[in-house]
Length: 421
Image 1 (cartoon, rainbow, N blue to C red):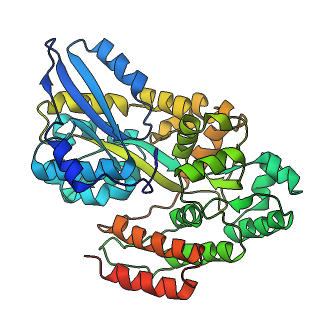
Image 2 (tube, helix red, strand yellow; image 1 turned 90 degrees about the vertical axis):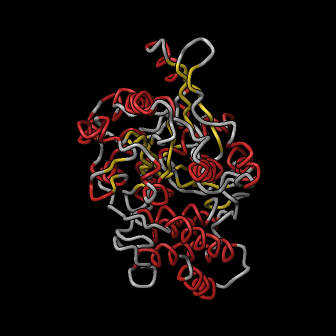
Image 3 (cartoon, rainbow, N blue to C red; image 1 turned 45 degrees about the vertical axis):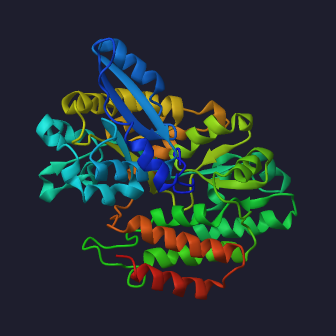
């Protein structure tokens, strides 16, 4: 998700392979400049920055190729397998970190190019997530993080008799049970809108606040031995049972139309969601506000920039990635798109902390998001994290639409998750 996380359909394998042969570093352009290709997804906020980089580096031409979220990562895997076609700089999102970290031999070790001198610039967990081989290999430089918040419709809150100012709304839901209770109050108003958009979005935010996700650090499946996943599951099921979900598939056309027409009153909003809404739903300007998420803290999403070994210009590619992830550029991307920096020194920068987003009713998103991510729990992402997450989400969606009862869905999810290899 733009990030349109994991909800956008991928291209077929045949189409991906066909496209791979024509992709990748183009070497020198026709005017004698080196061409660097940046492969990313959604809205990284790089369009203007790349033109500025070109202006400051006359010998370099930069091409940005933007794909859908799932398609991007599948293309990257297939291009690495083929040994050709990948960009010189490629984005990797949180959910796919382990998949690509486990094939570090396909990427340039950025420590060899001087990245280690900058490691203290990032949040410690952001730097360490892409560190592999016992700390000897670093394959990614952190871009954004997905600090948690909640978007809401003040007009619908007022119509339902609920407080609508940010401070009072945050007090409605100190935790997720309180959020569900507030939803029951909203539903009693019998408005032509539901409390929230989707079970999956609520579930992922609750899970992001847990200390343990799907796996422990030894890559043992923990969904039945640690409380994190089951806690997120049970609380989301409580929300479903209360009839509070609009049952949309997040980020598809129907969901987008519902967002703009006020068919749901709250929306879980990691920082990157704001940029996606601004880009894809401009008519919703001023309709939504932003406040603290139940539970107060957490992170969902965020990406890194890596350099595949197949790049013909690895040093130039690294220098571009290092520039794009430097504090000055991360600050600009945040102000222009909403993607939250992964550089903690910016969390004390007035340009960030005092920033209010005019698109979202002048919400103080700088303060809200930096507070959320600064105290997030460190959650390990296992090798098969994406596969197991997909299983859990699919079963939860079947509960949401009434296809399965919750306990049957949970048992099926556990059985399928244990079969992932």
